[in-house]
Image 1 (cartoon, rainbow, N blue to C red):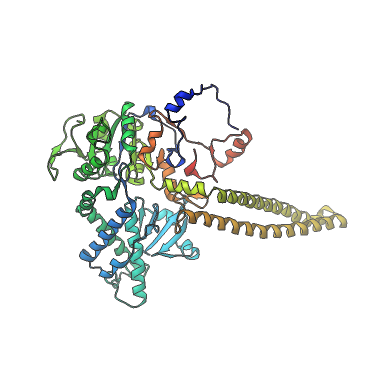
Image 2: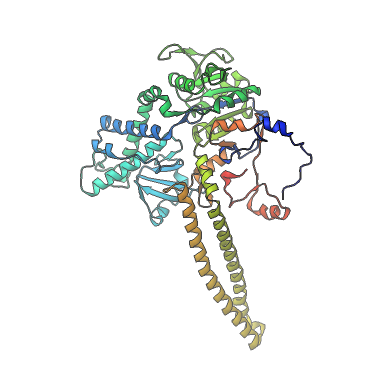
Length: 552
């Protein structure tokens, strides 16, 4: 039962309600802003934004297919790969964010928050647990080594699918005894790879090719020539930025993209959408391109001024003034100088981005800035949770039965141990035959009940796993939920929980809240605190078995 408010708010008059569209606003669950730690927007002086996959929402299908096709073309034309790989089909459902690549074996796997591998594919073939569990038993301690690569951004999705397709393709060729150049293992280097083809080289060839299409402008030139095909216009974005500015907050753009592309995309998204802002530049007090995150937060590269008028922007040189000029565009730079020049520091700055490492983790660790992680997939994740709530309720009931049965078995085993001890000490304690017989009867009965309970527990375990699989498959047929893996947070979900003060699916979700809103996180208790929480009837707590990514 929720406690009563200490004050009473007067309901709005009917006439006022009609003018407001029928009543008080409600927030769609899929468009909520969720808090991991309390965030008082009243204390925020500046709000910064990344551009790609943050302010700019890409049309997933065409964008990922374009990256995939251009990468394949580059592998064929510049890396010596056979033209047959152009027939490999991009499957957008196969990859989710938060996966890890093992370059030695060509596998992709998903980890939970404890570092345990919970699902693994080689190519697009599911690897059974008995094969990957022993192999990846200590993976969490080695995950930062060069053997592994994390897939944390939406830009990495086509790259990862192509890698899996190529692993599968060349492995099948090798099994048929066909030529697998350019991935044949060189003599003497077999130990560098645990598979039959050079999956390490394959990963770096794919990574270099996709980096090249970003770096040489071939990808972005196609996007700029057809912005409406590749970029989604969020109608709520202009008003969201205006609302934040109107509350007295200064806004800045900090993107790794460079000026020509940034200007094209931002003009498409924001120019003339509101009468007060004929140009997108009017929304932002500071514009920084080529930010080179995450280096921006840890290194000391100077700010440079960009020539905005040239087709290929020239750099004027290092910025010497002590303040930012709203009419200018800056490139590179660093967090320490940024704070000095804008006069805002640490927790007075909120940065909104989509990259868990480049935007969120590094800004949180190195700067103390408050953070909001844009998780575009969250809308689908929440819809699946809501649509599957009946199945989840059945799972909760069976899971509670399972835990209660396991607890009862434990209690009976403890009593059984006491009976064993009593029977052993029977001669010493000079128990009568009748007393010994009573102990033996109780011992046999308990053993039989434990055996029956163990069989029931195995059935409950099977039921729980079947329901968990059923729920997982409604999210993604290969990997299950993005932010969870069974009852644990996924590694990706755990990173969001640890490093993002808030998270949401898109920037315009802030429009539903006051610019001075206090985003409150649930009370976060340790496991031993829940007995106290239950005894006091507390409801605003985050429990281990609840979906941490959906707590209010």
